[in-house]
Amino acid sequence: MKTKIINGRILQDGAWTDGVVLYFEDGIITEISAQNKPCDEEIDAHGCYVSPGFIDLHTHGAGGADFMDGTVDAYMTASRMHASHGTTALYPTVLSGSREDIDASCALYAEACKEKTQYAKMLGLHLEGPYFAYAFRGAQDPKHLRNPDPTEYKELVRKYPGMIKRWSCAPELEGSEEFATFLKEHGILAAFGHTEADCRDAYRLYDAGFTHITHLYSCTTTVYRKDAKRYAGLVEAAYLHDGITFEIIGDGIHLPPELLQFVYKFKPTTHVALITDSMRAAGMEEGESILGGLKTGQRVIVEEGVAKLPDRTAFAGSVATMDRVVRNMVKMGGATLADAVKMASETPAAIMKLTDTGKLQVGYAADIIIFDEEIDVKRTIADGQTVYQKQGVIKNVWQGK
Image 1: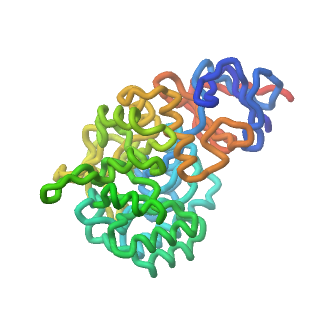
Image 2: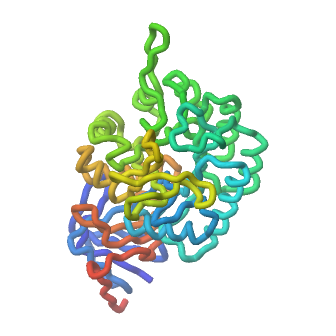
Image 3: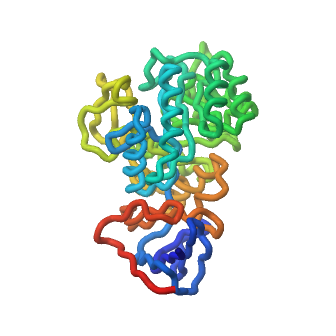
């Protein structure tokens, strides 16, 4: 079935274009032109923005579900909630856990991928841990932290081929360089995460495969003093090293407006991805919740728009959705709307070396969202299929061929 989107402001090459029609068929964008041709289905954008769908590189769940809950339904629930906020693709993220917990999460992901009722597409797992620095653990459960274990990670990659797409690790731990080399050989992104590594470490380890930084400013080092000398941290490396990419939690709380502005001013948008790092409470009311699986997770408190440990000594993941982080990057960070959308779509796709999504371009997947000036999502389309539509806002008009 051939579909067209009319009357939209379409994002092309970093600018919004009026007066063009976007066509897609069989899940692929086939044409973007000024010609309005007959189609099987017509979607009237009513003057709203039309952009590539958001790609969330780092999310633990949403809608009351966590990817470590142990059920396929949890994957579907979180995927559905994220789709309603403009996410067309995501990377389910697994927290530090026992070897058995991580293995079970991988197995469950494999089952969830077989479901035909996905909403936001799941493109692969992100394992956040368990190879982290104790001092920079944040809300990661300390009892599960350990050094890279070759027997463990090699078995997981072998057992679940092509499913693990990213692994965050503290590269100062013993065995981490061999770990990064192994990941690189298997096409898995190695990311700095929950780490004491500093600027010199980042430069040294970049060639080993550590090219991306997990939630910059959260559980990462900055300028520090040792004896009489000052040293640059991982934050400084993120700006100094031209090849390093990083992600930021754009909930406006993990990073205040001033830091969002700093990021936008001093790092190219090609190297910064907006993420949610959302836990199960994303899209839900505030109150008590659980970080991680229902059976083995930690109790947390959601208040003031963020999840916190019960003693309030650390954040415990965000409750943001991708529309919120894009909105914050514009209103708090001073980014143009086109740049903010790029940081939530094209840049994440490039970081993960995706060559068929992240842009509105002929030959790319029809992963498309329609939203208004407040980034209120009206429709989400993944692989050409509408997976979310706000009721009473945009209607289909069926035509003959």
